Structure formats: C-alpha cells, structure tokens
Image (cartoon, rainbow, N blue to C red):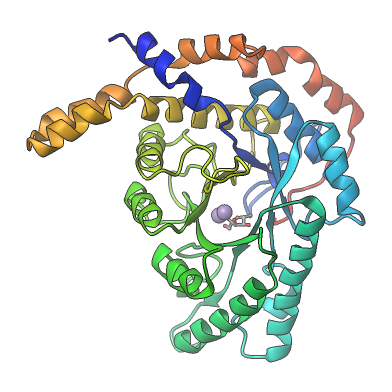
Length: 395
Ligand code: LRH
Ligand code: MN
Ligand code: MN
C-alpha cells in the first residue's frame, strides 16, 4: 500500500488533535546570561492570548492556552476567558508558581515552617479559584524544591510534608478538576530534588486519588533516559495526565519540540497511541492526556516557533499512526528482531508533509501554515503596534 492510501486511513484520527500552548512562550526569554528583546512581544496577558489564537488560526491545532500564575494574573479571569473565546481559543491548564518568592528559598510545600507551607498551599487554592473562572481542568504543579548539600535537609521528612500539602490541595479540587504533578531531576536544586522522577510523582499522586496524575516534561530527564518507556508505564497505570513537550540537547533547554530528536518524539507518540492516550477518551471529548508545549523562544520569533512546534507534533503523530501494528506484532511474536525494527522504521521514515498539506487545505487551512503566517502581515503589525514587550516570567 502506498503511504497516501495509508494516510487516507489515518486522516480521520488526526481530527480533533489538540495541543495546548503556554502563555510564556510568547514572552521574551533567554538564559541567565542574557534575555534578548524581540519586536512585537506581547505586553499583556491579552496580547499573549491573541498570539496563541493566531497560532490556532493558522494551524487548527492549538485550541487552548495554558496560564502561569502569577505571571498571568488579572483581576477578572471570567472576562479573560470570554476574551479568549471570542478569539477562538479556550484557557487550559493553570500552572502554579512557588519558585519566585524569598519565602520559598528552602522549600514551599515541603518547608519545615508551617507558615511557609500554608502560604504555598494557599497559592494553590487561589489557582483552583482561577480554574473555576477560566473553566480549566488541570492544575499543574512543578516544585523547585530540594537541597544543594548533603545533610542540608531531611529528605524523608520533606516527602511526608509534601504528601500532606498535596492532600490539602487535592481535597480542594472540584469533581471535574485534576491535579498533575510534574517531575524534574535537577535544577534549581542540585543535590536532591523533592520530585525528581516519574516514580516519586507517581507515588505522591497515587496516594491522593483518581484525579491526581503525573505530568511528563520531555526535558526533565537525565540524558539517555528512555522516555517512551515511562510513557508506556504511566499509561499502563492510568496515571499519565499530561505532557510538557519541548526538546533539548543538554539539560532543560526548552527548545522546539521535535527539533533536537524527531525520532524520540515519534517513539513517544507510538507509545501514546499504543497505550490509548491519543484521541478523546472522556465523554466531554477531552483527551485524558493533555498535550502541552513548555518552551521558550530565546532567539527565534515566537509565533513562528510555536507554529513549527505544533506542526512537528502533528507530523510525528501522523507517522506514529501509520505504524503497521499488525505487522509489528507478527514480527515481534515471531522473534524477528530486524523485521520488527524495520516495520517501526518504515513508519518513522514516511514523509507525511504533502499529505498533511492536502489534509489542511481540505479543511480550509493553509497547506503550509508557517509560510501563510509569514505572508499574513500579523508579525509586521504586532512589531509596529507593540512597544516594550514583557519578559516571560522566570528570568
Ligand atoms: C520547570 C518547568 C515547569 C515550569 C516551567 C516554566 O523547569 O518545566 O513546567 O512551570 O518550566
Ligand atoms: Mn515543564
Ligand atoms: Mn522545565
């Protein structure tokens, strides 16, 4: 069968693919050495949402914008939701932030001082209130907590306090809300991190209940980690809540997803599909797994960077859907090592770009969204209109 025929079979499955974009990807960002300003950078939350809506308009792939609190704090979140909806997008995951306050130098949800722990818990309760106004399903928690020197803290006691704090937060969620706990193996703490790996995140969320799940940020593993194995395991356990997609060469580089290692993204999507994590699993049509980007665009233009990212995810999803799973299983069961590998590689090496362009055109989208954006005049318009864009929150 030609790849075009096979593409026709998988095309309906691409319908409704939704990738959440992060508000902070539209702000200026950089490394600790330098943040370069760029023309046209949003000055307000509304302008970030307008840019995210533009990504959706050109790709049809990004219907939700994820917010970070307090970076995206506004007085009226219900009004912000209406603003976003008028532009054709919704507000997605709400990210808490306990990493930029002096009180949290030695910990937040794990701190030995009950006052600091209470303050950190209260911040999450405020995030849950935001979710009620924005209609968001997920509260995403990433904790910058840990220690720099052996002996500095009681690692076990910190786990206990973390469990207690998370319990209070989880119990405050509404029935239709979820908590996703993100892990990261180092940084900003360099000796030990309180949620360093998927196992720790899993142990903590499993103790909470059904609506607590793990968030897998692809940049948060030691080099060489087999991430698709973690995907398979978490789906098997029913605990993969969301992805933070990005790519990296060295550490938590937050580069464009699929840029450093498209094959890894393909392998991840193969396991997502294999494990039932792709497509609407819930009655409301929302996928159980939230596919988010968590990226920064330090030197490239932000909107094109985001367009490239969602297209990369779509492209590797299409290739993963093309995998001939019957042939793969047959080869695996026959012990045909190289045959099985060839079936997988055949799908990976299938160039789906022309098919995807035609598929977009059938849906009234531009075949090449990136080129269409560059020709649209939007970039020139925001560069002329916006002076003094803000920096993304963490630098
Ligand atoms: C931490 C992280 C987490 C934060 C984001 C800005 O490295 O991945 O998801 O919320 O970066
Ligand atoms: Mn992340
Ligand atoms: Mn990160």
